[in-house]
Length: 243
Image (cartoon, rainbow, N blue to C red; front, side, top):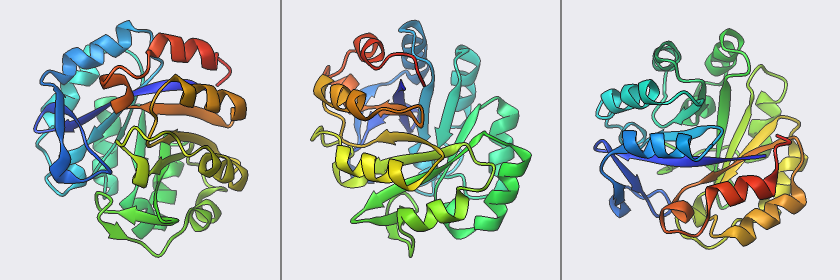
């Protein structure tokens, strides 16, 4: 398992939200390219990049910044936020983005995302954005008819790489990872799982260490890093390199 530090882009700045709400953004760095280079210099295995503006329906605002980040670092990038058609997905792959995280589109256009995964095998993650056991879409603002179990049933036998599980209730709250929720979802799928939402400090990393398996691919570290709760090098050392 590896740590995947997060850059959430809003108006071309590096921000963090609380519970994914658009009006709660707090700027942590006005230069996301510099932030990405810092994460690479720290030895991080992959960057978790989110286009918040696109997630909330404001497309194209961060496109140049995303391209500059891709050019500035050599480590893999996984990108999510507002990928609601195959053309957009293909554009990001052409740009050199290594992995895409698809949420709303994967819920509302299952067959198209399955087809996309055949063209880009092992490159797509389906977002499992959970609030009250329900999958949320459109920037986490709309409830879907899906539970995590239903999405696992739809996608487990496809060519997607895995899932990114986010606990919306705890996201950005520094309240601690929901390890029970993570363990439950690990038991429901055979695909790789990346987890995030609520990570607070090194105690959470130690908790993940106890349940980690090769299936548990990574943990997204956002606000916990920016407020000094987690040292990335220490976290990676603790988790080891068995991902």
